[in-house]
Image (cartoon, rainbow, N blue to C red; front, side, top):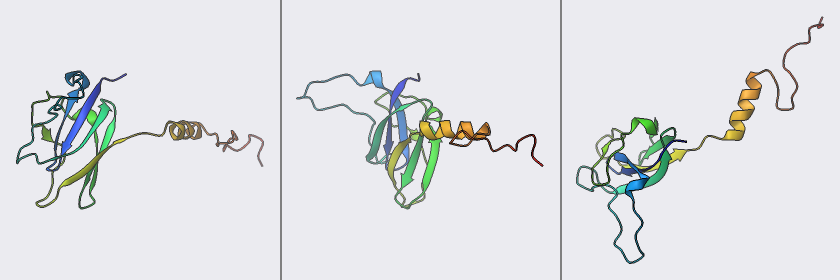
Length: 132
């Protein structure tokens, strides 16, 4: 199984993937951890999610643009970095969200069986050999 990372995205289209091991446990009374350096370049954090290298993500802008990309194309970096460009945004456009795409395993299995010539009920689409 692929290694787990935290994928963080900011409103100006920047983000990064950080190995989960870099986030140590802290007590309840601590001030938390810095996941990504915020700056004028990056903007505010809009999303953070757990991902694996073989996952895909969907980036969503405030103007309704959706971009799907592979997590493996995003470089792993340390916690104290500003990240890389995840999506090129037009002036005035902001990244509003990010979502990990979960493939439906049940649907994938049904698609594979249909490729073999069987319907969902197990019947074959192929014509019988003795058809006239």
